[in-house]
Length: 125
Image (tube, rainbow, N blue to C red; front, side, top):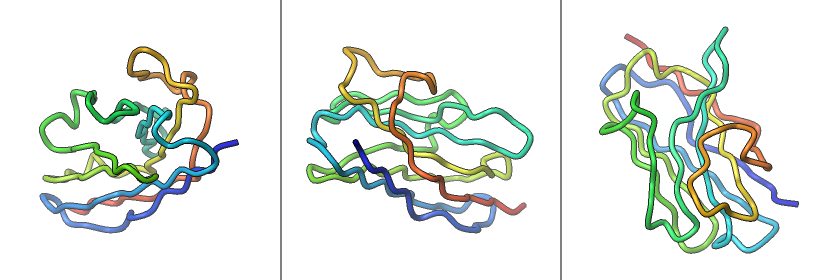
């Protein structure tokens, strides 16, 4: 069982920045593929970004490309640096783990098998 905990959400003005963190425990961190998803009120949860277990490859949704950066350290934490935030980025952000990893970067909810409880990000205009 993998335990996933997000932190770092909050309220920020448009064009501001936030960094989300996600700590995963319960196994070998360097064997996990990690992803971020978000769910806005009244909308379905959507893919945001993913990173391979080595950190060598990343993938982003078009809506955040160039503004968000996913990264990971060697211990147990994945980050989502969010810059130039827009009101439409307002959502609950979820960290997800795929274990064991696939040979590709998964982008669908059903491809991840462990989830955090979510952290709220609110961007005011």
